[in-house]
Length: 374
Image (tube, rainbow, N blue to C red; front, side):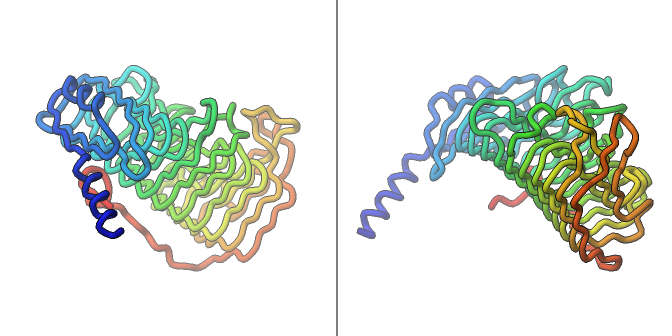
């Protein structure tokens, strides 16, 4: 039986193919003939002004990998519709779009790893497009680097408006860096959902990411869906807050948030029902949300784009040190935009006022194409 298993494994490996391509035409040819387990490598000179469309289907045991050793510039963009596909090492640098997405991932069980989007900016700050958009379900984004966005549009956004199953993505161990301050809404660094889909259960996990100097808007992270987990992320010197803007039953735990001298930095802002804010370390943040943890005031019978009343929230074991304003604000924004409802059924336990933060800074060797593969 052991011999048979070994033969089967060897036969599977022998059937897998590695194809090296140097042109968009060669890439499309390789995609058309790709089989589960194959590896397609893009090599040679950098590509400019290319619109890549990949339709691929691997399996859980044998995903199809598309690996890039070149950079993409100009108006280049990538659109993946697939299952069990790995995008590895793609770099988009010093280009721009008029609309759309630099990378758009649809389907299920795909992975974006060791990729970089850097300085992909139009001349006008008002031109809106997203850098990385996730549709479908069960995708993973890890060891990627997003740096220097200066225009309208979310850096990484999860969309929940497709039919069928959505969400359940893992976004982990990525580096978000130097997001320039915007001129209004639409400058989030990370957003899960929209106001219209905010009552959907997304069940995404955002873990162990590093956000540095991301100043786009007050909602650095904008949660607009339910049942998401934000854990063990590090936020340093960002002029915004981790914001549960819409949706219910999210968990925010063991995150490290440091103001780092940014007077417009913020901690955690809460809207909605059933959230848990547990074991976070918030130190030296500014006055962006009037305190370290801000529970918003709500609207009677709110529309999806308004502030729902904060109810049944657990705030436990958080360390709050030297933050501007109050430690925990109950009724942030009371009186503005018809917000008249104070938070109810709030449990606050074991708040600590001393503690040593454990700062984690990702390096180029940890993310982007330089990262070591698992």
